[in-house]
Length: 373
Image 1 (tube, rainbow, N blue to C red):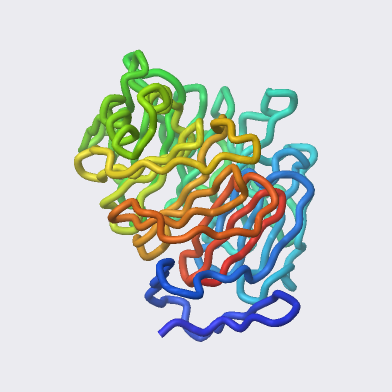
Image 2 (image 1 turned 30 degrees about the vertical axis):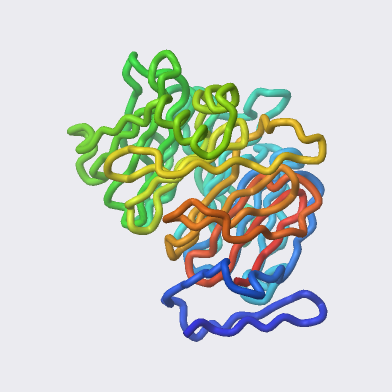
């Protein structure tokens, strides 16, 4: 059984450390539902969240003020063994990814007047706020970083049209590089699956007619993909219209640029977030669109121009989506039906994450909330 969380009057909590490798079951359909355990206040919107694999702490990146925050997910609030906040004014920070080392993270720089401060990535020791390594190779902004669950390699993708494989322990050139063919448009996205043995790369078809998703053997990627899927614009549009979108809106959203991609734990589904406040769950074997998820509009009621923040829960049962109105929607992954909404944020929820080891979620607007499920 799961350790029982203890909420106190100071809105802090603790979780038993006795068992780390536990079966997580997160049921959003039963009462009383998730409770907000702690809130870490910020000064600008969070742009990225990443849990450490132990589930013990959470890293929060805020691009506007170039700050990395660290949340203690077992006790709530600031950690006792590392600084709660690190300013990265020189490099800036946009995306952050936890590594296997509890005191080190990977991050990509932020923007300065629409231009990235650097096109490199950094391996940062949060214990003493030192850049351990710098990874150079991309010639344009880096839009995704994915850490391998199996070893110290990681993937990056950039607007320069390349996907690169790196090793956290080796500075300098990348271990390998994949360049997009001429028949695709836009920037690729890349992500490892939960085993680290497979990674996926997505890229837009020419003419806005959908997306390619190619799957590679991480140990033998140079021979090319072992599976190729096409997610057509027509399939996306059909799913949106079936969900109640008007023909005009369904057509516009079917051409939206993808901004994030992740596998569920079993590898049977792929979740992508896109501009315009939309996320799609896709069959991991066939490439068919299973479900579409749309953001709840903010106070103005206007359609969103922001990318949808979305993730799977660790038990593969649910999809979590951040909304423009400050709520968090919890959907059933198999049916696509809404199970629950979480309320408490004061502004658009631009980042969400699921704890890999505990029945816990994180969501962020300017402030970062940790929910006990």
